[in-house]
Length: 493
Ligand code: NAD
Image: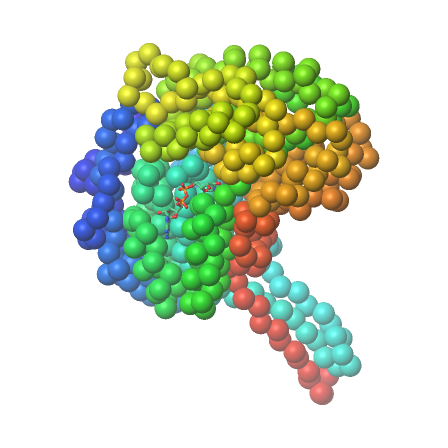
């Protein structure tokens, strides 16, 4: 495995500030552990408020020059970063598998979407343009221009440790801002390695900073006057707090939270196709995806047929190390998280759900110390059960029977979350009803997982999102710039 050199040299995950590597100076820290083997991969020390202050001040100094560079010049290091990410794709994917537990194919897919965001940000000369209207009033021309604002920060979760930082970073710097990333302390190595590539891509020192840490590090960022805005992705309670605190401190903020997503299966659907996509949506990345559709809401007339298909698809899933090419379901991020998911399984049994497939007895040869749970299926799930309402974030799928599409949409409406949902149907009318009558940010029709490409925003509503401008694409340009209007009159003309 190509290990981050900055970590190999020190044994500790490093901060990258002002173009140099520094060991975080806070007193707390934790081990980074391979979830498939429990092998210790590195130590992450947490940044102190002084470390955060230094990163933000350095970013503010770099902003002075960077924000005035020609936009064409600003995107050249991004082209180089794209080249480096492509050249190191396999190596980054392997590191991601080791620290996260997902499969190699999933890691490569994640990196692909991250690189796509770099590609989109290379189009900033077109995307960042304002607008001009001649003769907006008699003898008056009016135009709007976009300007960068200063230092932006992003705080990111463990489950997509390469892609989610890249939802933000390329757009922040392409628009002329400087940027501070605080990755998840559970999976910080791939971000470290990406910053080693950033170090070679030609950005001026101080434009991009990496600081490692936990809650206190985030608090220091939120309380720092030099931070213009914060992007957050993580669990709902933290997203809500970050949104409130950042806003109270006068910062721009976008905070994406947790989820509970549904697949609706209509009686007209191709049931084989729907079952295959349902299983991959629920179990890919061991269910640790904010877009995982882990409740299937099925029209009663096809419920039994659909359940049979899902059971046989799920039984065929292979559990194991993400490095094994045959693995479908990799390890869960930590023993604590595995315990939590197993508790959800126990609660579903206690609440009367029908256990169709029990993944609790799974054993993985050669990975006896890993955090594994096999594919687990529940039938006859009721909308009021815990498993139907709360985010499980594990390979657990519930199946529910409803009379018709209206009842299915009612189930989705009652959910506190609004991140994603999919409908499997052969009816355009059903698809239209679904689109119009649901309050959900990412919708799929005959698509198992509604994951938007980088040139579209990544949706999310209700308790899945706090803010207005979303990650990825054009929304990022709006988040990272402010607009000035020029009104021009030349009386002699
Ligand atoms: P998390 O909320 O525990 O942590 C996310 C980040 O916040 C980490 O960097 C962590 O250090 C920091 N953090 C944690 N507690 C904090 C606190 N009290 N104050 C300040 N900062 C804090 O989330 P996680 O377990 O890393 O990620 C999984 C969650 O992220 C799931 O709920 C998942 O649905 C969600 N997620 C959402 C999206 C989306 O687009 N909506 C995408 C990916 C993941």
